[in-house]
Image 1 (cartoon, rainbow, N blue to C red):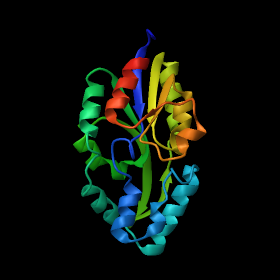
Image 2 (image 1 turned 90 degrees about the vertical axis):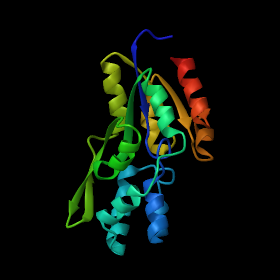
Image 3 (image 1 turned 120 degrees about the vertical axis):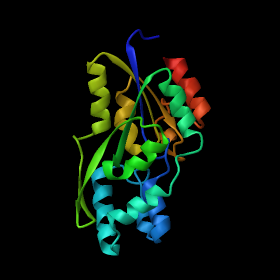
Length: 202
């Protein structure tokens, strides 16, 4: 058991909220937007692809925000975060965007979120600005440099830098096939399992 102060880092989409781009695909009928980081590990390539699809189909930021505004967080997510935050410092490390996340943050009680920012012109998404390369991993390393023990949970390829850098890590709600590639990482299939695992490694 570590005597260090502790930070819990969590991915957002697929962990406590639905996948935004899949919801946009369902609303617009544009199946190309169903691709997520579960399918494409390179986030820059994925976002370049998405922005091209949005431009091709004339999908505005306002429409994406309208879709997000109609979504709820995952069942049990707020209770999960509330329980975690009652005992630990919790940070959401996400590849979402400031312009997308606010409705979810309101529903979740305003947890601390580190994410990207979109560049928008005339209601069109034209690019995005990552904070740094591999920001989830860098955030973990920065907390560790401040002498924190970092416990991390994520569900996808773009969480691997965070998971492999953290002091204790687990998948949560991962897609089929991903855990088999990383058999040393445990898997939580529910929030109860996640809470039990977090306490067991703390």
